[in-house]
Image 1 (cartoon, rainbow, N blue to C red):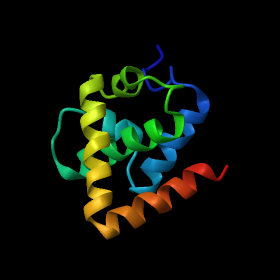
Image 2: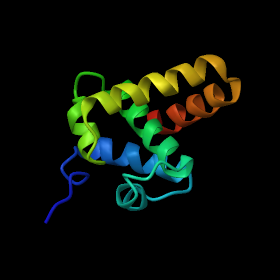
Image 3: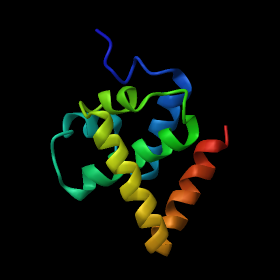
Image 4: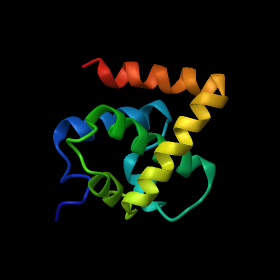
Length: 107
């Protein structure tokens, strides 16, 4: 049986895996801990939402992105705003996310 992650188009899956690698975690660990609120799970999940939404804007719906972790579009929206706000106020987060986006955008 396919998981919701496997239902995503292959480029999105690869970008999510790159994000997990960047944070030294595994997508299956994040999925298994989708209801945990520990920073070690929340931050990479929020970054996944942010990077996928940023790169694929209208091609992948917020509902589809959120469904991987059983989250709704409002959670995806909130996560993207949280990361965006952090990038504005925290230089190190901005550098980190920009580095990650470079990795994701290099094929």
